Each structure stands twice: as C-alpha cells, then as structure tokens.
Image (cartoon, rainbow, N blue to C red):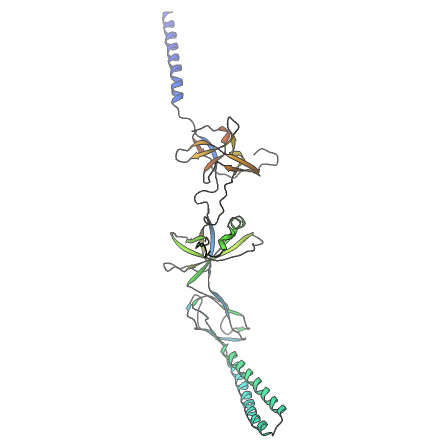
Length: 378
C-alpha cells in the first residue's frame, strides 16, 4: 500500500510540473501569421509610369508603282536590298511607248512646219487669221501630245524616290501590270515609328495643356511625355522616343487610341518594321494631382470609436499598422478616401476585420475566383 501511495504522489507531482511548464511554452510560441490580400493605392512615386506593348513601323514608307501599264521587262533588285535615291528598280517593255513617241514626234514636226509657214503667210495677208489660228491650235496640241509621249516613255522606268530597304516585291518578271499597281514596298531605314494603343482611361487623365505651345511671357515650356522603348534580349538598352501623333477617334473594336512615336534606328542591332517592343511612358508631369484615392470597400474598417481606418502593410517586417482615413462616397465595390493616403501604400483588402496592430501577415496568392451572385456577400 505504501508503494501504491508513493507512485500516486510521484505521478501527481509530474502532472503538476507539466501543467506549470505548459503556459510558459505556449507563451514562447511566436504568433501565427495571418494570410491577407493586399491592394496598392494608386498615386505616389511612379504613379504616372505606364508600359504598353508596341509595334515597329517605318517612319518613311511608300508603295511604288508604274504610272503606265505594260509588261515588266526586268527587275533589278531583290526583297531586303538596300537601295539609294534615284536607283533603277525595274522597267517595263518600252517598245509600244517608243512607237507612240515616234508618231507624236512626226505629228509635232508637221504641225511646227505648218505653224511657222502660216505665221509668215498671215503676216503677208495670204491666209486668213482664222486659218492661222487653226494651225496654231494644231501645233499646241501636237506639242502637248509629244510631251506626254516622252513622259510615258520615262514612266516605263521605276526609280527609288528615297534611300531605304525594299520590304517586299509584289510582281514577277514579264508580268502584265496596270498603272498604279503596287510593284515594291519601300521603307526608310534611318527613322522608325513605334505605335502603341492607349486605353481610354490613360487618355482621359492627360491634361489638355500638355499640347499647348511654349509660353513666351513666362518662359515655361509645356510639359511633354517622357517615352522610351526596350527590345527583347536587350532589357538594359533604352531608346528615346519622340511623340509624333495621336488619334482623336477611338478604335471601334478595342476602344483604344493609336499613338505614334519616332526613334532613330539603332546601330548596334537590326530593328525591322513589324517587330515588337515594350514602350514605357511617364505621364508624371501631365497627370492632374488627385487627392481622392479609391480603395476596396472591405479595406476600410471601423476602430473602437467607429472611425474609419485602413491597415498599412510594412513590407520589411510584414506587419500591419492602422491608419485613420477620411472617406467619401462609395462607387461600386470601391470607396473614396479623401484624406489619409498619399498613394503607393499597400493596404489590406481582404482580412482586415481580423487584424491587430503589429500582427504579422502573409500575402495570399492571387487566384481566379468565381464571381459572386447578385445578393451574395462579397
């Protein structure tokens, strides 16, 4: 019996010791990190920086064609060739035009002789003024016809109007072509166009005064958009873009506005029309400052005094701190914050009701979720 009591006392002592140690061990356990979804408040540093996919086009381009119909007798260049201004690219069979020129030349010579003879006779009074006028009209008609025949013969030779690269050839040798039918596509090589599509919301936020002229009185220059292009495989090279034009009518399908910039063709590598690029635009000097920020409705919570607040995430420590805000009207699933946010802050959008000052959090992965039905809670 004594052994039984001794064993019981020992067991109770051990249980008491374990119970005494348990709170200490629990207190030493670090608090668990709560998963949340976050939202970046618009505005702040870099708020005006946007990136868009762009496509390269030739700044100078032309569709070359013969001005007269005929059979292509020879093609002197190939696709991709670099050509100089005035270089002969192709020519038509000139036989028919040479025959026409000879006929027009004979008609002109005869009309010229009649005109010169008639001028002497009318001065002597041997022919009427009416007959001389008819001779003069025939002479002038023959002169115009001869000039036209000479031009048509010249038009059988196709020359390059400027220096560039032949992007494409559209006809084959000995093919019959009509006047104005495209034979070559010629593109300039010194300058390139970079085209992007700007969404409506970006166009709306640009101030109208960005397009005003320089103010002579104040000496201030109108703000400009800073733009540069980068190409795949060369992320560290930036090429400055100059604004060229922007459409004022949106594309009916995409509701975007076409904006065109120009850049000098790089020497270090080849950039051809049709290639793609990434365009970065800095609208920082053109965007009107808007103190009103819009955040998700669920991001705004009430503190103990029923005052609105949001939870700001400290990215270095991954902890949250509350910040009082002044709210405005609610627009859809967002609410206006009139005061309390500068822009650029990362706030908690989902999970805010369960937070406490200094609590550690982790960002939840952004996964696709089903859209809630009408009337269901968000």
